[in-house]
Image (tube, rainbow, N blue to C red):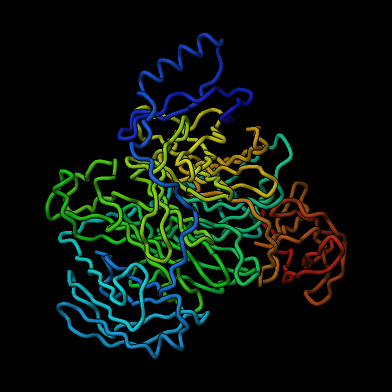
Length: 636
């Protein structure tokens, strides 16, 4: 791994090189390169600087200092927010910041410019501090909707909210990701759990790694895909195989109402976007809540965050008609509108909704227009959300090379990080491209997974730690972490800062995950034998499956019988106790064996006609007992 730090250089790293031009994609500022005498290194850096161009000039008018905290709006927030040009025809009208008892009694009128006055039903938010009005019939495409209230609205002209309804594109053409399975190579197989065939994961450790399990969601490879939990040494703990065509992303441990839960997205992938739902499971792997996007959208695969007591932040995409003539496209073109929603989990109400269109136009994008007729232009591609207690949310846009700080009260963009029109000066080594997982980390620190691969120079991916100085309107490099050997990463990826300060880096389209110290020393590497995982996380998890342990018997060398025990998802099993006897109801304890990985083989006494196993903790507490199995049918 390579680490570059402003004001100092870690072993094996080099000082930052010149930054790339803000409007182009020819290079990346501050890309460290390995080795060589100082003179040769200086010459190489000079050549790189010449190729990439000079550092970006500071803004001509720096303006006043920026802020990470939005001044409080003492009005009521409304969504769709004022001026939204692409609201759903089935949108609810959401209000936040007013007690529902008062809200329900307020005079609220909803009038479509074509459809006229709309009636609706009120649904309170679970915290009582807002609610949504659900119109009883849809709006018309392209019409202007006016919402009149008896109270002042944030971002609006007093008590009036106006938004436009999206126009669906004509001749829309989408494609579904291929789901054809390849040969079942490099997969794990278990006698006691034949339905599980996850990819193997090779883990190597070269130092002390942070506590917790590794959480992945393999996909795109041979055999089964699905959410998967691994122990510190890479042994399988839990795997939930999904049917063909269904994928999972973003498996992680979060908290819901103070309790740890497993969360992940699950669904289909269409034209690079997710169409599915977000799941929340308890320690028994039972789904306790399903989060769906509001207003007729489908939850996207890129982000699923739990915040507060009952709020989920998700992404969504919607294809809409758009005149693209100003960027060289057709006047009757189409784009993907990037959407961020906050959902009230108990009710499904929308608490916040932001649309990229209306705030960021296609001219900010770098990718070329699609060449297939009817394919929407994915100009924004939202792929990260980082809400903050100060009333803002940082939204990552892969295809504009930018992250946008947005007011949660009004949806207004406060400032931009990176891309063509950065509000902050990007100092040496801080530029990123096609990035994923942009997150606030406190005290002005932002982490970024910088993909970069599709640039003309095909630079390797890296994880970045950036310091955002809002008062000075600058961004400086804190750390840059690459993979050894370098990896070209076309998409996906993430950075997790662990409690001990280590960084867990998921390399996205590559099958690798690494854990590094802040000095850049690699302490753990995990490699999938098949496919890849959109993101990788480490987390502490305690699971107890609802069903009993699984048991199968088979013959071993010399004609003996072995009992194979496993329990998909059980984290507290320390040892297996073998029970044997002449009938299923006449079983006695024979011996205990320490658990070895996902499946443990236990030698069976010759005279045993039936066997079962008991799962025990390190203190001898029995967690569960398998069904009795006859040894007469033991296979090879």
